[in-house]
Length: 78
Image (cartoon, rainbow, N blue to C red; front, side):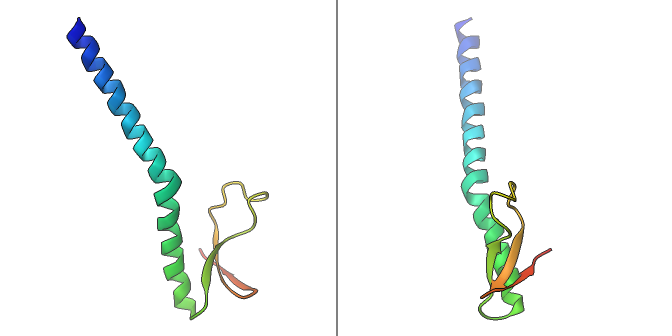
């Protein structure tokens, strides 16, 4: 019985560790990957274009849409 409990504890620890790593990836690494991809797309439009999130966080809760902007001129990415 003690061995079964030990294996269950290790399984729970493993699942929690995998969930923590996935959460950190989604919170920190994935946004950097998205911005990098959009930034490379913006470079196609020419020098000086930078990737910016579309809208503000108050109106766009998901805030996953990007634009390529140079000064006040923005081009939506699709």
